[in-house]
Length: 321
Figure 1 (tube, one colour):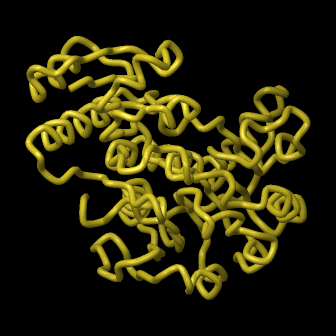
Figure 2: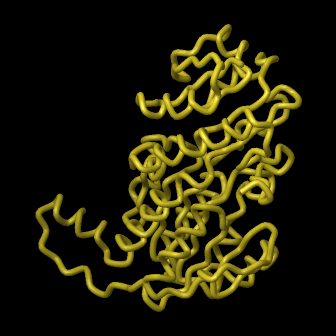
Protein backbone atom coordinates (compact mmCIF):
# COMPACT_ATOMS: atom_id res chain seq x y z
CA UNK A 1 0.00 0.00 0.00
CA UNK A 2 1.51 3.33 -1.08
CA UNK A 3 0.64 6.18 1.29
CA UNK A 4 1.60 9.71 0.21
CA UNK A 5 1.49 12.32 2.98
CA UNK A 6 1.36 15.94 1.77
CA UNK A 7 1.10 17.75 5.09
CA UNK A 8 3.89 18.69 7.49
CA UNK A 9 4.71 15.95 9.99
CA UNK A 10 7.20 15.84 12.83
CA UNK A 11 8.83 12.53 13.77
CA UNK A 12 6.22 11.64 16.37
CA UNK A 13 3.40 12.22 13.87
CA UNK A 14 5.14 10.04 11.29
CA UNK A 15 5.54 7.25 13.84
CA UNK A 16 1.85 7.49 14.76
CA UNK A 17 0.82 7.13 11.12
CA UNK A 18 3.21 4.31 10.27
CA UNK A 19 2.28 2.36 13.39
CA UNK A 20 -1.33 1.86 12.22
CA UNK A 21 -0.37 0.74 8.71
CA UNK A 22 2.62 -1.60 9.11
CA UNK A 23 4.08 -2.81 5.85
CA UNK A 24 2.84 0.19 3.89
CA UNK A 25 5.20 2.36 1.87
CA UNK A 26 5.07 5.93 3.22
CA UNK A 27 6.26 8.96 1.28
CA UNK A 28 6.35 12.23 3.24
CA UNK A 29 6.51 15.30 1.01
CA UNK A 30 4.43 18.40 0.22
CA UNK A 31 1.91 19.50 -2.40
CA UNK A 32 4.53 21.84 -3.86
CA UNK A 33 7.24 19.19 -4.12
CA UNK A 34 5.21 16.12 -5.12
CA UNK A 35 5.76 14.81 -8.63
CA UNK A 36 3.04 13.37 -10.83
CA UNK A 37 4.49 9.85 -11.01
CA UNK A 38 4.67 9.44 -7.23
CA UNK A 39 1.14 10.73 -6.78
CA UNK A 40 -0.27 8.49 -9.50
CA UNK A 41 1.14 5.43 -7.72
CA UNK A 42 -0.54 6.35 -4.43
CA UNK A 43 -3.32 4.22 -2.99
CA UNK A 44 -3.88 6.69 -0.15
CA UNK A 45 -3.22 10.44 -0.07
CA UNK A 46 -3.21 12.37 3.21
CA UNK A 47 -3.31 16.10 2.60
CA UNK A 48 -4.59 18.28 -0.25
CA UNK A 49 -2.94 17.33 -3.56
CA UNK A 50 -2.66 19.60 -6.63
CA UNK A 51 -5.98 19.45 -8.47
CA UNK A 52 -4.39 19.01 -11.87
CA UNK A 53 -2.65 15.82 -10.71
CA UNK A 54 -5.54 14.08 -8.96
CA UNK A 55 -7.38 13.02 -12.12
CA UNK A 56 -4.49 10.79 -13.10
CA UNK A 57 -4.40 8.90 -9.79
CA UNK A 58 -5.91 5.66 -11.12
CA UNK A 59 -4.65 3.66 -8.11
CA UNK A 60 -6.17 6.02 -5.56
CA UNK A 61 -8.65 4.47 -3.14
CA UNK A 62 -8.97 7.17 -0.48
CA UNK A 63 -8.14 10.86 -0.12
CA UNK A 64 -7.95 12.33 3.40
CA UNK A 65 -7.98 16.12 3.16
CA UNK A 66 -6.22 18.26 5.74
CA UNK A 67 -8.90 20.92 5.25
CA UNK A 68 -12.50 21.09 6.42
CA UNK A 69 -13.62 22.47 3.06
CA UNK A 70 -13.86 19.93 0.26
CA UNK A 71 -15.56 22.00 -2.46
CA UNK A 72 -12.64 21.88 -4.89
CA UNK A 73 -12.49 18.09 -4.76
CA UNK A 74 -16.21 17.30 -5.11
CA UNK A 75 -16.49 18.95 -8.51
CA UNK A 76 -17.29 16.46 -11.24
CA UNK A 77 -14.24 14.96 -12.90
CA UNK A 78 -11.71 15.98 -10.24
CA UNK A 79 -11.50 12.64 -8.41
CA UNK A 80 -11.28 9.27 -10.15
CA UNK A 81 -14.49 7.28 -9.85
CA UNK A 82 -14.85 5.25 -6.65
CA UNK A 83 -12.42 7.25 -4.50
CA UNK A 84 -13.43 7.78 -0.87
CA UNK A 85 -13.12 11.42 0.23
CA UNK A 86 -12.82 12.49 3.87
CA UNK A 87 -12.12 15.88 5.40
CA UNK A 88 -10.69 17.22 8.66
CA UNK A 89 -13.88 18.50 10.24
CA UNK A 90 -13.31 18.55 13.99
CA UNK A 91 -9.83 20.06 13.78
CA UNK A 92 -10.67 23.69 13.08
CA UNK A 93 -13.52 24.58 15.45
CA UNK A 94 -11.30 25.80 18.29
CA UNK A 95 -9.09 28.11 16.25
CA UNK A 96 -11.76 29.54 13.95
CA UNK A 97 -14.47 30.04 16.58
CA UNK A 98 -12.00 31.94 18.78
CA UNK A 99 -11.10 34.08 15.76
CA UNK A 100 -14.81 34.79 15.25
CA UNK A 101 -15.23 35.85 18.86
CA UNK A 102 -12.13 38.02 18.53
CA UNK A 103 -13.32 39.94 15.47
CA UNK A 104 -16.83 40.29 16.90
CA UNK A 105 -15.44 41.82 20.09
CA UNK A 106 -13.21 44.07 18.00
CA UNK A 107 -16.26 45.45 16.18
CA UNK A 108 -18.44 45.62 19.31
CA UNK A 109 -15.73 47.39 21.35
CA UNK A 110 -14.49 49.44 18.35
CA UNK A 111 -10.96 48.12 18.80
CA UNK A 112 -10.32 48.35 15.05
CA UNK A 113 -11.12 52.07 15.19
CA UNK A 114 -8.84 52.59 18.16
CA UNK A 115 -6.04 50.82 16.29
CA UNK A 116 -6.61 53.20 13.37
CA UNK A 117 -6.50 56.11 15.82
CA UNK A 118 -3.30 54.80 17.38
CA UNK A 119 -1.65 54.59 13.97
CA UNK A 120 -2.55 58.27 13.50
CA UNK A 121 -1.52 59.31 17.05
CA UNK A 122 -5.14 60.31 17.69
CA UNK A 123 -6.53 60.40 21.26
CA UNK A 124 -10.29 60.13 20.71
CA UNK A 125 -13.25 58.48 22.44
CA UNK A 126 -15.21 56.55 19.80
CA UNK A 127 -18.32 56.42 21.97
CA UNK A 128 -20.96 53.76 22.58
CA UNK A 129 -20.01 50.08 22.42
CA UNK A 130 -21.98 46.82 22.47
CA UNK A 131 -21.83 43.55 24.43
CA UNK A 132 -22.11 39.92 23.39
CA UNK A 133 -24.12 39.38 26.57
CA UNK A 134 -27.76 39.75 25.56
CA UNK A 135 -27.12 39.74 21.82
CA UNK A 136 -28.91 37.36 19.44
CA UNK A 137 -26.57 35.37 17.21
CA UNK A 138 -27.84 33.62 14.08
CA UNK A 139 -25.35 30.85 13.29
CA UNK A 140 -25.77 29.52 9.74
CA UNK A 141 -23.88 26.27 9.39
CA UNK A 142 -23.55 24.08 12.46
CA UNK A 143 -20.57 21.91 11.78
CA UNK A 144 -17.51 21.90 14.01
CA UNK A 145 -16.86 25.61 13.44
CA UNK A 146 -20.39 26.99 13.70
CA UNK A 147 -21.17 24.75 16.66
CA UNK A 148 -18.08 25.88 18.57
CA UNK A 149 -18.90 29.53 17.86
CA UNK A 150 -22.46 29.08 19.13
CA UNK A 151 -21.13 27.48 22.32
CA UNK A 152 -18.85 30.45 22.96
CA UNK A 153 -21.62 32.98 22.30
CA UNK A 154 -23.87 31.07 24.69
CA UNK A 155 -21.15 31.01 27.36
CA UNK A 156 -20.81 34.80 27.09
CA UNK A 157 -24.52 35.35 27.66
CA UNK A 158 -25.79 35.52 24.09
CA UNK A 159 -28.98 34.02 22.66
CA UNK A 160 -28.22 31.46 19.97
CA UNK A 161 -30.30 30.58 16.92
CA UNK A 162 -28.89 27.87 14.68
CA UNK A 163 -29.61 27.06 11.04
CA UNK A 164 -28.56 23.87 9.30
CA UNK A 165 -29.33 22.07 6.06
CA UNK A 166 -30.84 18.99 7.70
CA UNK A 167 -31.34 17.37 11.13
CA UNK A 168 -33.64 19.16 13.57
CA UNK A 169 -32.21 17.64 16.76
CA UNK A 170 -31.39 20.75 18.81
CA UNK A 171 -28.12 20.67 20.77
CA UNK A 172 -28.03 22.21 24.26
CA UNK A 173 -25.96 25.21 23.21
CA UNK A 174 -28.74 26.45 20.89
CA UNK A 175 -31.84 28.27 22.07
CA UNK A 176 -33.58 27.72 18.73
CA UNK A 177 -32.89 25.57 15.66
CA UNK A 178 -34.27 25.86 12.12
CA UNK A 179 -33.64 24.61 8.60
CA UNK A 180 -32.29 26.81 5.80
CA UNK A 181 -35.73 27.77 4.47
CA UNK A 182 -36.30 29.95 7.56
CA UNK A 183 -33.27 32.23 7.12
CA UNK A 184 -35.23 35.18 5.70
CA UNK A 185 -37.57 35.16 8.70
CA UNK A 186 -34.69 35.00 11.17
CA UNK A 187 -32.41 37.71 9.76
CA UNK A 188 -34.37 40.70 11.19
CA UNK A 189 -34.00 39.21 14.70
CA UNK A 190 -30.22 38.75 14.66
CA UNK A 191 -27.61 41.13 16.05
CA UNK A 192 -24.88 38.84 14.72
CA UNK A 193 -25.01 36.62 11.62
CA UNK A 194 -22.20 34.06 11.41
CA UNK A 195 -21.55 32.01 8.27
CA UNK A 196 -19.42 28.85 8.17
CA UNK A 197 -20.76 27.23 5.01
CA UNK A 198 -19.06 25.17 2.31
CA UNK A 199 -19.26 26.31 -1.30
CA UNK A 200 -22.16 24.56 -3.02
CA UNK A 201 -24.77 25.55 -5.61
CA UNK A 202 -27.13 26.33 -2.73
CA UNK A 203 -24.71 28.57 -0.81
CA UNK A 204 -23.29 30.51 -3.78
CA UNK A 205 -24.19 34.20 -3.27
CA UNK A 206 -26.62 33.12 -0.55
CA UNK A 207 -26.17 36.53 1.03
CA UNK A 208 -27.28 38.59 -1.92
CA UNK A 209 -28.37 42.22 -1.85
CA UNK A 210 -31.88 41.00 -0.98
CA UNK A 211 -30.70 38.86 1.96
CA UNK A 212 -28.44 41.59 3.32
CA UNK A 213 -31.34 44.06 3.15
CA UNK A 214 -33.31 41.80 5.50
CA UNK A 215 -30.61 41.97 8.18
CA UNK A 216 -31.23 43.99 11.31
CA UNK A 217 -29.85 47.53 11.28
CA UNK A 218 -26.54 47.76 13.15
CA UNK A 219 -26.00 44.00 12.96
CA UNK A 220 -22.67 42.31 12.26
CA UNK A 221 -21.94 39.79 9.50
CA UNK A 222 -19.09 37.30 10.00
CA UNK A 223 -17.92 34.89 7.30
CA UNK A 224 -15.32 32.14 7.81
CA UNK A 225 -16.66 29.53 5.38
CA UNK A 226 -16.33 30.45 1.71
CA UNK A 227 -16.21 33.97 0.32
CA UNK A 228 -18.68 33.11 -2.44
CA UNK A 229 -21.50 32.89 0.13
CA UNK A 230 -21.67 36.71 0.11
CA UNK A 231 -22.21 39.21 -2.69
CA UNK A 232 -19.20 41.36 -1.81
CA UNK A 233 -20.41 44.45 -3.68
CA UNK A 234 -23.79 44.32 -1.95
CA UNK A 235 -22.00 44.00 1.39
CA UNK A 236 -19.84 47.03 0.62
CA UNK A 237 -22.98 49.04 -0.14
CA UNK A 238 -24.60 47.97 3.15
CA UNK A 239 -21.49 48.86 5.15
CA UNK A 240 -21.07 52.18 3.41
CA UNK A 241 -24.70 53.19 3.92
CA UNK A 242 -24.62 52.44 7.65
CA UNK A 243 -27.09 49.56 7.35
CA UNK A 244 -24.66 47.21 9.11
CA UNK A 245 -22.53 47.96 12.16
CA UNK A 246 -19.68 45.96 10.69
CA UNK A 247 -18.46 42.86 8.90
CA UNK A 248 -15.58 40.48 9.54
CA UNK A 249 -14.42 38.42 6.59
CA UNK A 250 -11.73 35.77 6.79
CA UNK A 251 -12.79 34.60 3.33
CA UNK A 252 -13.65 36.85 0.40
CA UNK A 253 -14.90 36.85 -3.17
CA UNK A 254 -12.67 37.34 -5.04
CA UNK A 255 -9.88 35.72 -3.02
CA UNK A 256 -7.30 37.04 -2.56
CA UNK A 257 -8.78 40.52 -2.65
CA UNK A 258 -7.29 42.81 -5.31
CA UNK A 259 -5.34 45.74 -3.86
CA UNK A 260 -7.78 48.21 -5.36
CA UNK A 261 -10.96 46.58 -4.00
CA UNK A 262 -13.09 49.13 -2.20
CA UNK A 263 -13.74 46.98 0.87
CA UNK A 264 -10.12 47.55 1.99
CA UNK A 265 -11.02 51.18 2.66
CA UNK A 266 -14.25 50.55 4.57
CA UNK A 267 -13.55 51.30 8.24
CA UNK A 268 -16.16 48.97 9.69
CA UNK A 269 -14.90 45.96 7.75
CA UNK A 270 -12.27 43.67 9.27
CA UNK A 271 -10.48 41.64 6.60
CA UNK A 272 -8.12 38.74 7.33
CA UNK A 273 -6.48 36.67 4.55
CA UNK A 274 -8.08 33.25 5.18
CA UNK A 275 -5.91 32.64 8.24
CA UNK A 276 -8.38 31.83 11.02
CA UNK A 277 -7.68 28.14 10.47
CA UNK A 278 -4.55 26.88 8.70
CA UNK A 279 -1.84 25.60 11.04
CA UNK A 280 -1.42 28.95 12.80
CA UNK A 281 -2.64 27.33 16.03
CA UNK A 282 -0.49 24.28 16.76
CA UNK A 283 -3.43 22.45 18.30
CA UNK A 284 -5.19 22.54 14.93
CA UNK A 285 -2.34 20.61 13.34
CA UNK A 286 -2.33 18.05 16.15
CA UNK A 287 -6.06 17.52 15.65
CA UNK A 288 -5.69 17.06 11.89
CA UNK A 289 -3.00 14.43 12.40
CA UNK A 290 -5.16 12.65 14.97
CA UNK A 291 -8.06 12.50 12.49
CA UNK A 292 -5.74 11.17 9.77
CA UNK A 293 -4.24 8.49 12.04
CA UNK A 294 -7.66 7.36 13.23
CA UNK A 295 -9.01 7.13 9.69
CA UNK A 296 -5.91 5.35 8.39
CA UNK A 297 -6.31 2.72 11.09
CA UNK A 298 -9.96 2.34 10.14
CA UNK A 299 -9.09 2.02 6.46
CA UNK A 300 -6.49 -0.69 7.09
CA UNK A 301 -8.98 -2.62 9.24
CA UNK A 302 -11.74 -2.26 6.66
CA UNK A 303 -13.89 -0.19 9.02
CA UNK A 304 -16.12 2.76 8.12
CA UNK A 305 -14.18 6.01 7.77
CA UNK A 306 -15.09 9.15 9.68
CA UNK A 307 -15.79 12.54 8.08
CA UNK A 308 -16.81 11.04 4.75
CA UNK A 309 -17.77 13.79 2.28
CA UNK A 310 -20.83 13.24 0.10
CA UNK A 311 -19.59 13.97 -3.43
CA UNK A 312 -23.08 14.99 -4.55
CA UNK A 313 -23.78 17.58 -1.85
CA UNK A 314 -20.28 18.62 -0.78
CA UNK A 315 -21.28 18.13 2.85
CA UNK A 316 -19.95 15.66 5.37
CA UNK A 317 -22.12 12.61 5.88
CA UNK A 318 -23.46 13.11 9.41
CA UNK A 319 -23.57 9.33 9.92
CA UNK A 320 -19.75 9.25 9.71
CA UNK A 321 -18.94 11.84 12.40
